[in-house]
Amino acid sequence: MPELPEVEHYRQILLSLVSNESKGQKQSVHLDFGPPPLPTKRFLAERTLRLINEGDYEITDVLRKGKVLCVVLKQTTETDTTAAKEGDIFTITEEADISGKEATILVSLHMGMTGRISSPNHIPKLESLSEECSYPPPHTHLIINSPNGQQACFSDPRRFGSVFVHSYDSQNDIGEEHIPAFQELAPDALTSAKDSDLDIVTKFANQKKVIKAILLDQRQVMSGIGNWVADEVLYRSRLHPDQSFLTISEASTLVSEIHYVLSTAVTCLNDEEEQLPEQWLFHRRWRGGGSNGANSKDFNGKKISFVKSGGRSSAIVPSLQKKVARKVIAADSETASCEKKKSATKPRASVKRRKT
Image (tube, rainbow, N blue to C red; front, side):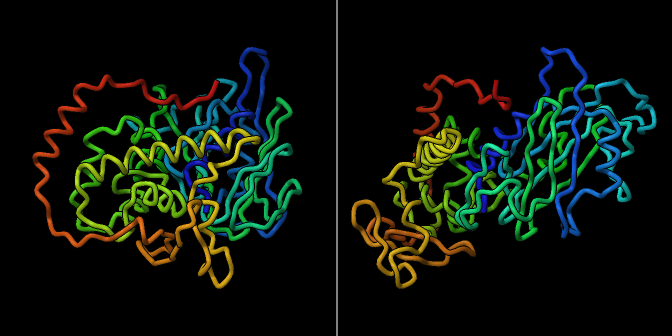
């Protein structure tokens, strides 16, 4: 399943379709369906696709929160948008999603289990898919054509992904609160873990729920973390996936490792010549080594075991990740110490959403 690093890589591919305003020419996006069978649910209707193609829309940005993408389409010509009810920010209709007269349309994409974004020059690999390198890949459902000559497509063999279209009827800049697909998600893991803010740290600490389940819950603390990222972070943090009631110190280490793993993975995936660090559990967590993973070892030769945690199979190194029996802990002193440390740290600028 694509996780935040893979989806951020897909965003970079889609950014190549953004209109080049410096050329000063009309540029309208054109969408096509892939060959049948197409998804029957959670997918844009044929009429919606036609209205977008006839509405003279251009791609102006591609946003991401967690594992969800949003392609922003804006009309190249002014239209009458007074039909929208006063006070409406976004609208969703069951019949066609849009009218074709909206100034801005938001196309949200969720990858599901096997969804990915590809271009003629780059077809990202997924562990769950075969080494297929043809373009467009099999099970392509949506093809996006940009007037600048670039093309990208959305493929999804298992058809658990989704494509939703919403209208946005406001002149204000688009924020994540305006994107329906983003609204139920917790803060993005890459940006929220950057400064290890005490607020984020304390949300992980002293929780009865096991830490693996918290990491996988896209609505609780952070969004974007999936199974392999969670296993990598817990391995580096020396935490058992079934550990509960983390201390502030453990939670602080966890958040730092989240940022390290995510930022490193994003950099590596966006650089085709760079691989994920060899020391990572990632290279050995796929039940390799024969006997359903019984002979798997980490970079240092320590045995890897597989347990079920948070409803998912989890790769752990038992000699490093030991579960400690705990009840509710009093963390006031740790919290005060952490607050003092954070107050002495100069805040850093937030990550920009758009790559220039």
